[in-house]
Amino acid sequence: MKSKEIQELKNKSHEELSGMLHESREKLRVLRFDLASGKVKNVSSIHALKKNIARMMTFLNQPNTS
Image (cartoon, rainbow, N blue to C red):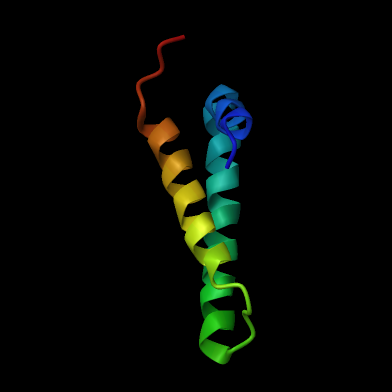
């Protein structure tokens, strides 16, 4: 994830981040099932998605200074 994309995440509202987090967790769940059934070819996408989820959770847990 590029620094520009991280900055965009930082500027999102709490509600937008919550929605994105929910969607990402659902996508991760589907990827895990597909991995178990052998449908996933790009395993690194799971790692990248987990990192993005962690970033979103970090921004959600930061105190709101504005």
